[in-house]
Image (cartoon, rainbow, N blue to C red; front, side):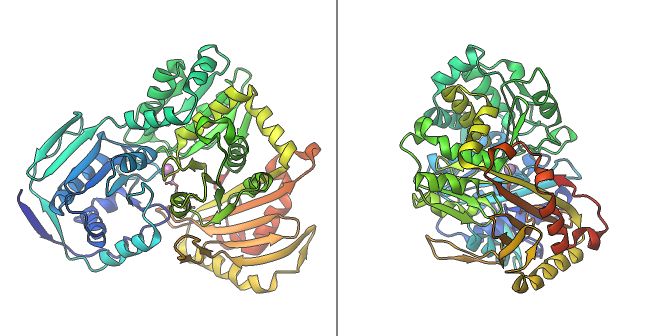
Length: 544
Ligand code: VG1
Ligand code: CO
């Protein structure tokens, strides 16, 4: 194998965010841009000669050429085996599983998740370590540091690999295997859930369902599992064909972007269950006939009912949620007397807790839930979890949610996003918030008295590493919270996220609209951060 060292110049903007490096496609297409980042990753890792690397992506524009480029760099850097999803496709959770199942050294996942795709849209790349999870911060920091001084990368002179044929080929010391992207994952799902019960419930018509794959990666997974294996009608999976531009839409599973699903779920003829997933298949939106389940509630409900699922019949060791996720799951953990951890935003912070066996289930308010079966959040797993619950409890989604609120109370919750805010204004908002923190505790605003006001810092209980500046928290005596943070996944300007939550124990008030119930907190949030005043905006761009 002929290996060539190519001279390059460093780029100064290759700092991975919450979930890998995400930029516009055109940024990635600059000479050496992708190559540099991949070489920076390999330069920061040790002792992988002859070992296995998993490769796959969500199928967005630039996925295929990027895979061919990475194959050649991985070959030149001494990997011994590459496992690649057919067509260059792997959902994020499936990639995590394949890394674990085949004892790979790590994997590269090509995705910008729920961001739009196409020549003028977004691309992304993320490195996952041997446990199947996103590289921890110490690694992503090392990749960035290396990228700042990188002056060459290595590439091998080999032909492009036929990504469409399931096969293994040997090129000198390198073996390249193209695998069915769905088979291993489907088998894993079968080992977790009661597929016989699901087949009966779906086959008998007790459960009718609608799954929106949003023209993204979960189409082939949903068709194989929900239709072929569980017997759902073929029209139960919509937008099932992965497209490079996701049909021109945002593959973002929320009521605004999964529009057809939302319309059908809130109509008189709605099926029993409806769900959607994102570009790379790690997010999930859960709905039932005429009801939307917030991700924070979904996590709490899953935790409260996990013993009904075969793989979790023994109960949960513990649970974790990201800091801005509502405290609903904390109440479940307290009820079952199991630990509940609060981590910074991003799945990489759950990895150590999962590896150490401290938690079984975890989730984020951003439509992410998962368990110790892989080291990523997992959209279809959450869908199967809910289907299995409905089949076992023989209750509608609405009944399951209302019964949960009656037992535990409701954490009324919403998030407001202000997108593409210019960086200076965003930094000004954060500075302004910071400056108020010392004086806030003890102050009263209407029915809200501030209990604490701080900037979240996390110490990992397994390896002792500390991550600071993970969001500004204002907590009130009555348990309500307002949280502010800047997104680490956007590609244009800054996105300010405002997370609002209020606990309502009184069941007669559980059916309130969240925007109404949270109106006073929403007003307070503006008083503290002044986003509208400082940017001239009148409304958030996204409300979830
Ligand atoms: C967002 C979410 C976070 C999630 C991350 C990656 O990050 O808030 O909870 O882990 O996306 O998800 P941020 O920094 O933009 O708030 V995915 O499905 O985009 O890989
Ligand atoms: Co995603």
